[in-house]
Length: 320
Image 1 (cartoon, rainbow, N blue to C red):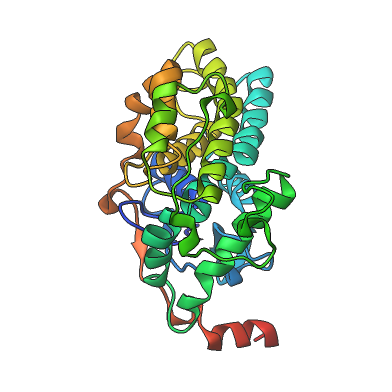
Image 2 (image 1 turned 90 degrees about the vertical axis):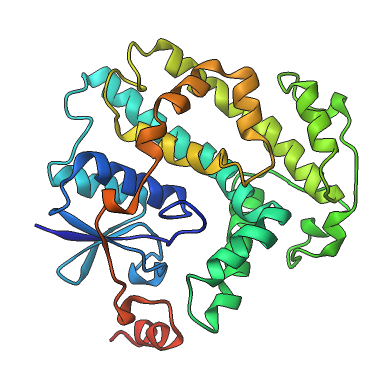
């Protein structure tokens, strides 16, 4: 049975800018044949009832949405990379999936959508190319606000100083972010190299920007040791041996987004290279896996009825 995988579209060199969508694409690239599926870069979360991508559609009906539901659907179709794991490792794989989704999502959201330079120079211009007029001018700010809500409110990580306008509910990026401020080394997690802090101090940005970079670096120093430990205990190239499991696909997708050279800050790549040798080797070893060419996957043309347009929003609201 062939199915459609609906995902967010590309920004830059990635086949999808969203790590969850990218993980689903990586999964299919390794586990499925090209006759099993088509990838539709519809960039329309309204296709699913809970407004989440990736989403799987079969015979016109969405049967799974969100990365965990989509992975369950893949496994129900016999595409299960975890089937031969012993029970203990299956439980560990599930725990790692949840850990990666909860924690690496914070880093990915900040790097792409809340880091102001990245948002203004990369994310917003890229998203404008994916969504038709006039929603292309509204969608970037909606995703910015959603990311901020996820990090600041759901995970209780305050990215800004108390007197910063980013701490206000209705704030949006502005020119005041480009004022220079120095980070004190004493404020930084003790595993962050001083050379990395010095590098941040030479980067243009405002008080809120540096506060966010600092807190994300500290957060990365709390998250990465768990992955470093899991990889150090593995006897193969992946988290659980010699072949990729579902946790590998999600980890590689987030790592690919977070270490792209064009995302200059908050220097996750620098942090990995200076402090986490197993994570660095893991990413270096799997460059081929995370380098996705369009000929490696089956991409279908987006049907006009699947696009995020005013007309289709009205049809969705009216139930037809």
